[in-house]
Image (cartoon, rainbow, N blue to C red; front, top):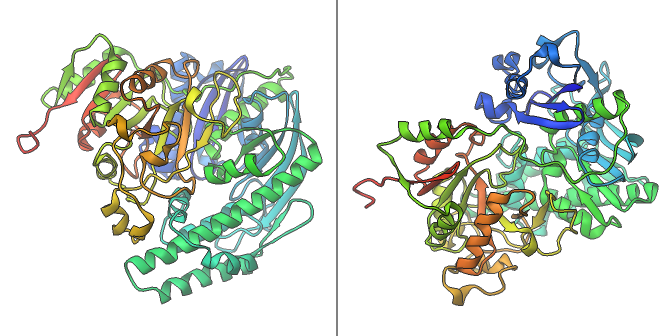
Length: 572
């Protein structure tokens, strides 16, 4: 049985193709349209992600037995499939994306985002948080929190996602850039934590309440605080204080909800989905500060992940199939490109690339990394979701002098934002209990990767809070390699992420990390997505070469070959 699932809302459109319950392919529309977050526009009609999945599987629309998606997807995205498409509840699609790929036979499931399905369209009532108990193939709703949209659709009451977004917008970041608010929160103080408490309340059943009036008051407070701040460092610190406050309260809201959910379900297993859980710092606290013992977060917890959830719901519930817990689904769900396509892309850039001949590509890449080179990786299928996990990554030695500044410059991104890490699973520590060889889960890094000291000062941070980066290439500087504090600059707010890789999840990346560890004694590398700031991750070999050259990176690992960028006379 072939099932095509569609995801998104008015942004983050996606598609997932399922064959007899197995995921064949999944891709986000933005990777194909090359428009970040794929906000609805004229290209939405094309539904490129669905075509990508069908072409990869070698089938047509006529071969598909069921087309299904969430009921709040912009109708233009699925227009070509009307009237055959089946629509389901948005939060239920999220819950399915979290539970069905998890390793659990039963679990509590929490879904939280900005807004879900309309419960009363005329009165603008939408879902905001939903609590579930799941077992076998059944996902049973326990409680639902609903909110009202404002007349301009900008705000939604009782929405943890819109609470956070309101702060994101007021401190100067656009919609869909909550990760910048999380990054800035690492620089904040608790000055605004108590004032923010007045803008919402918690009930005795794990719920969160915030009126539209309170949201407007919150926005007014932030504007007033910013208006009293002078430019430069003081203005940045005010923004950081607002970010810190909303982060503290978001975590409080989610911990409250999870403690209630555990009380109602008695389960030790927790699955999470919805855009709120892209906030990895909050996710890490849920495992540490609630009674749950095990946690699963899908690779695409936001709206794009609803494509996978709706397809799996179609298989298990509508199709009536029995479910057994499996190892978590791989996040590498894009199509792999043939060697010929990669070699052709390299040939077209022949004046700017030169091949590095080697019989041990992972070993040579590790050596080049240990020497301070910035290495872009393009191989296998692309990751489904917002995080690069070694197939569309840029890697670097975390403490090599100047590397963090070079990465910020190459990606054209702000110095206050952290980079993530990639690490061998055996060295990832115990932040998240093991969930099997193919585990995909974020680990808290315990350190905030910022720029060098001069970068930190440029965004208004206090130099007293900073230390100079050390060079892990020098064995004398490599203290406990499992503790990344000595490999980055600055704070211990947990705003960086560590992604654990095992041979069962990604054999090639595990081999590279093993080689790097043998050379340096260090088990982890800086890991960031292979793209420029504001662009989606690269999808094709041609895009990989273009981005590599535009960013002026050093080495490109593409397929089973290594290439160096030919440096200009001024760089030589």
